[in-house]
Image (cartoon, rainbow, N blue to C red; front, side, top):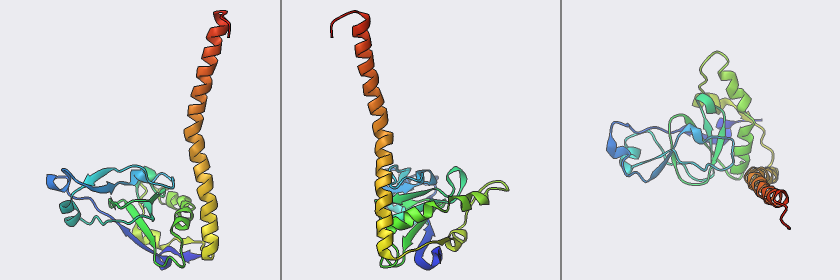
Length: 194
């Protein structure tokens, strides 16, 4: 068991002032809110875009691909996402990156952080749930040798892909079977030959 602070850089982002249009209008820098943390391996959504001026005049920071994101507040508190592209985040998102990739495999870090959800829920027992960077830095994770981390992440990637394929493919298959049923039903009820 290793404290997150001992193996990861941990930081949050920021939100440029919405009162300054030049921080947002025609922005090209991806900016993410905590709603992108949905316990899905890859972050798919972008909350908004900020400008270079917005980045320079706020505490927003550009996060690199292979960063694990953890929501620190509200309905998504404790849920995680895995960043596969450059983006900034708001102050309600913690960004975690391995300090040494020879010790901690970034995809393993994502999966390990999914096991922390219950710890975040404990924060909300007495009302509004909000985590601090200090809270996150103090959490512990099980860190096996690097080759084991790679194997575990590979297995979990396969399960994640399978589940994703099922949730995407199943509705399409159901729709196809319904159309097939309707076709044969109509043929049978109109007494037309098949």
